[in-house]
Length: 582
Ligand code: CTP
Ligand code: MG
Image (tube, rainbow, N blue to C red; front, side, top):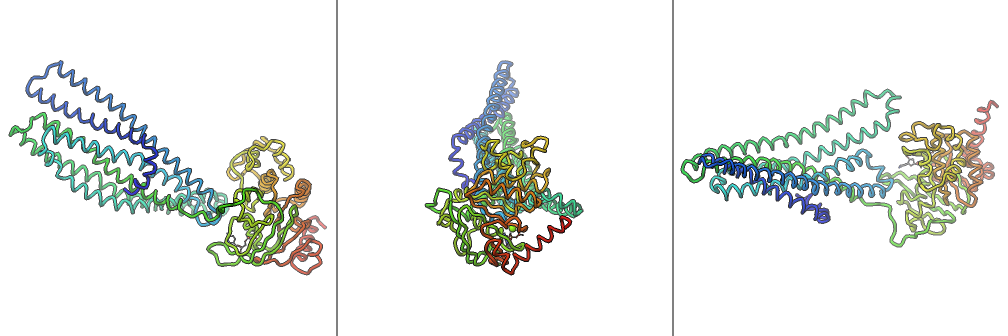
């Protein structure tokens, strides 16, 4: 029942709908009492041979009117109660989604996507059911059950009612016991579903890898294992759940047995009529539904409460990177001063960056190079404030980046991540992603700077070509350049290209760099690369080695120093020569 308390805010908010729905349920519960009573009266009239065609017609008319009214009321309580519960799903889904967008990289590093999806689908649905079917079964079983029992006791015989209800306490005890069992089992079932969801998501995303490595069989086996787990856990739920209905039926059977036995005696000694007994048994039949509904109620509520716990736990996860109280609203502009004493990723002791100190003037170009795993991407992530657990400070325009509103800070950047991502949308929409109101000309210009305009025109539908999930139909280089165009379109104060020229040939790289230079005068650009030609004209080059700055300067001075830069540059030049048949 805790889940109802947890959802109290929602019931309050939708008070009108719920009260209206409950009122309709109340009317239905009362109207339901009519037919058994009418049947009893008609039976007695038949017994006494006093039934006339006129009377029968009247009773039938009463039944028809009651039936029609119930039809209307049943329709409306569904609209009110189920309609409101759908709103709960919307509210929770939106909350969860907003929460997801606020969480940092660290959160996504820890969480499995399939699990998050299970929260957003399965769990929300279970909570919605609690607010819909849960409320319905509770209210309806109490109202119908209560009224039927009152009608039995007051209009027929309270003695017979008490006797017929003797099995009730057994039901109450068992229901309680089932509820506790169900809760624990539901939790396990939902968890198993999360795992399965996660596996499915990952396998489908990675299906190409699975196929090229011929791992289909193994993958199917893994999937089957998780799928079996879900079945097993749900069977465990069903095993407890299934106990409920037969128990109810057995108890109701005992009630019928008691009511016929003792009822017959009461008819014989004249304390009730035969019609009363028939009506009584029809009432008893009406009790089956509320008792079953009560069982469903437990099922629904236990499932909903397990899901509510899971969703709340997720919603309560702290947002680790957020705005300070008086954060600066303007986007940063100016020199970038980096002074990082030490940085480790959360939950990882390894020092990734150490003693990184440099200043980049506004409008200048910075090149960051170094072996793979040297810390290039990590440094960029700190600039973007994706992580903040570092010792030291990073300033832009003289102010620490933590002092800016996150939104404002990120607006200053156009970021092409090393692992670029295209949405399942048209190329145009992908490029205009962060600036949906961009004109055709702007989009084309960005694509031209990224040297992908001609490629796009080559597609049958040009800029309207829809790229499949993750842009399957494009080449790696095309996807990369579309990602670059997306960042360039923003004309950002600071453009970050993280290894973004890796999938283009040397000539295209040169074209892109030249048009960047032409179009980004006065704006800052940061480029990381493995091919040194991409950064050799930079105003500052930093060579990282195991998270430390091994060398820094401009191309000319670095070529005079003995070290990684010179070695690598000569090596790459030699390679290029060989490639061109020299
Ligand atoms: N790392 C980590 N946790 C992450 C990301 C990276 O512990 N979430 C570690 C990596 O294992 C690596 C180091 O941080 O040892 C630096 O990684 P990164 O900055 O990504 O290296 P890059 O220089 O960008 O390497 P590459 O050239 O391969 O992109
Ligand atoms: Mg990297």
